[in-house]
Structures are given as C-alpha cells and as structure tokens.
Length: 271
Image (cartoon, rainbow, N blue to C red; front, side, top):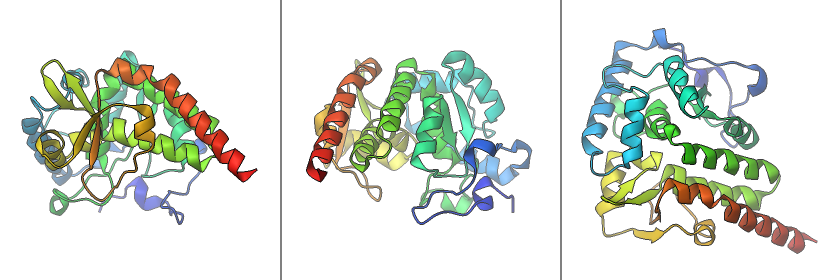
C-alpha cells in the first residue's frame, strides 16, 4: 500500500496532525499513484461533472477549464500551481489532513490552500468519514481562480489570526467558512447555483441543496450566519445565498466588526 503523508504523523486528541509544519515540506509524490487511484478519480470526476451543469456557479466551470482538470488522471499539483499562481497568486499546499487552526490560517493568509494527497478507495466511493483529495481538489481548487473568493479567504484568515486565542471568534469564523466556502449557494441570472466545495464534491447534496423542500435557503447575512450552528454529520438545515462573489468579499468589514464585538462581549463577561 502506498504510504501517504497522513500515515506518517500522529494526531492529538482533537484530531490534528502533529508535526513541524513550518519545517516539513510534504509533496504529492505523483508517480506513486496507482491505476486504481486514477480510476477512482475518473469515476468520481465523471459522475459529478455530469451532475454539475445547470447547478454549479459558472465561475466553477470556467475555473475547472482554466486549471485543466480532466477525468483520466489525478491533477498534478505542480502543474496546477503554475496555473493558479499566474491567475490569483495561490497554490495547493500538501498537508496530511486536519492541521492546527493557527497553522491553517497562517498558510491560507499567505495564499496556500491546504490539500491532502490521498484518495478514497473503490469501496469508499459513496461514503467517506473525512475529506480526501477529491473533496479538497475537485471541490475547492477550481474556484481559487476567482479573485474575489481568494481575497475573501485571505482577509478571513487575517481576522482569525487577530483573534486566534478567542474560542468565540474562532467558532464564528468556522461558521462563516462552513456556510460560504464549504456549503454556500449563489443566486446567478440563470438561477440558484452551488459554489461551496462540500456541495460541489457531493452528488447527493448538490440535488438536496438546490431542489429539496426541507432546508431553508436564506439571503446571506453576516449576523444571522454567525448565530447559526452547523452539523458535520448531515445535510444542512439552512443554506445562505450570496448574490455575487463581490458581495462575499465586501462583507469582510462587517464580519470583522461583528467578531470584534463578540470578543469584547466575551471579555466583558469574564471580567
């Protein structure tokens, strides 16, 4: 079995991988992908690409063309990074999996998007407990060609690092990230579309988020979003709908004010 970065490092009690992130350079080791790995990518890629037209934001479809993702082989991060860097200054940065919050936001502040290199097996095509490379790369990377989204991520990281020792602030930022980057919807002239990577990489939630009568679909509102908890073990009960990626970027000022206020309130209670 091919050794992956996730197999090399232990985890702490919170599930974070323990290693010297600043001084440990991890790579994709592309040549060690097996024919089965490439076949798994192809099955997942073709299945979801058939499902996405008319359902995903146009920016995603443009992005997947720009970074030259195709069905018959796993993306090579070195090639992807050359394209991304020329477009938005971003790059895919290899991690074993979940890393400590401070390191995650420091990397993202510097325009590094954390991604694993391991891919699910044939027996895991329809269910996986933790995100693999298909989620990280297919779900997220095409929209790293969108400058407004990229700049939003940088600014959000800066706010997180400003309040890195505040659990209240980090929970609020986690909700913002969850309901936008992972599970956001966007209203485009052609209709409601998905852009969150957690939906993009899930055929089931693609249909559910757009067409099922169960969840709420509400306009993007910072205060409401920050006060909305989320679950990782089920489809969302509520989705927030942006009108444009420019709106998302322009919300940063309000996000910072709301989080500053939450931190001040928490400190006042303690004192």
